Length: 212
Image 1 (tube, rainbow, N blue to C red):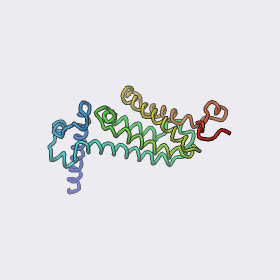
Image 2 (cartoon, rainbow, N blue to C red):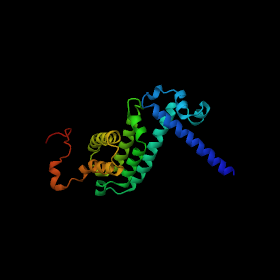
Image 3 (cartoon, helix red, strand yellow):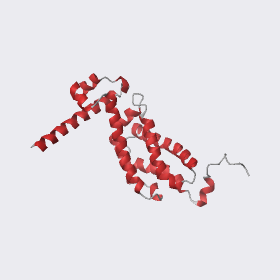
Image 4 (cartoon, one colour):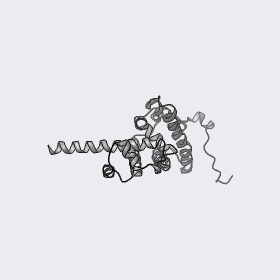
């Protein structure tokens, strides 16, 4: 039937696009992304030049589309997370954090390639801004001072990204849930310091305020 043929055609195109993407990231292991030649991609993906250009505009387009899809998947998860009430349940591995880690683990080799010396130098910055905007929205109600929030995020996100990089690079044996649990606990624990111990975790001094 026409519908069946269309579905088969779409599946074939998706398969070709997937082979091209895999080939680009395989080459990125040894070659800077801006130096990867389309001819090398064609050889690894076992496809033709005309087929490549039906799917993508360039090698850079392959990489940017993967990045956009990865961040869109994360955005879908963030949208769900923002609907949840903020509370001490954040100290446990939330379903949304687990889902984020599962996506990263599934795409481990490609994420590591993007973050390598041969990868896209813009990606890490783009991902940082992306997660900064999410956490800023998520935590706005817990901070009375915008400067405190921004300084906390600058500190916490650096650890967040380094922990993920360490996991993907050195400890891929750890389950996504284990890493999600560590991230949730470390990222959110300072926000649930009780009154009895608050003196051990003072607020950031306001050096701009004149001394009385």
